[in-house]
Length: 166
Image (tube, rainbow, N blue to C red; front, side, top):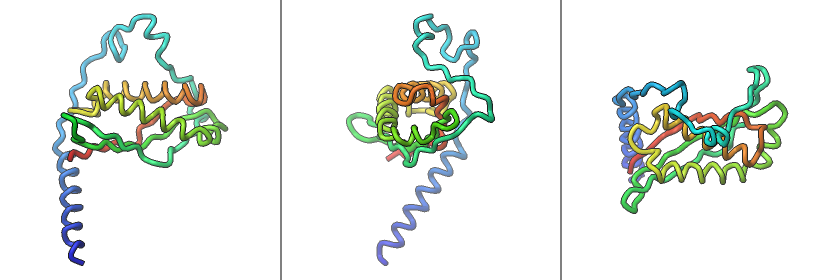
């Protein structure tokens, strides 16, 4: 009973802080795209190696929801400064959801490595939900998914993303 009140106040404080942070967050400043490309001018070799989603008609899509969230630590000065929690869905060609779930542990391992790399280069610092940042993360997640599951994965959807500072 003695722990109930402090626990309740902690949860209310965290919820209020997250709500205030979301409410008071400034609008992201999007820079115009150079030549219509999200990363400016790409060299021909870079364009060959970047994953491209297969063209799929809207009625020819299925979604595989990955069961558990991903928790990524953001390390600054040798200490965990924040945790980022993400939920992902995969857009797949019809009939391949069972195959996705069969290789889910391998997919999760690849996704975690991509997310850790993204965190280590500062991808979850500052305005981490900017269009450029999210496109880069999705692109790397798609590349990782296609390395494991092949062209059956046509897109990676970030359903939820939350950063909790310590």
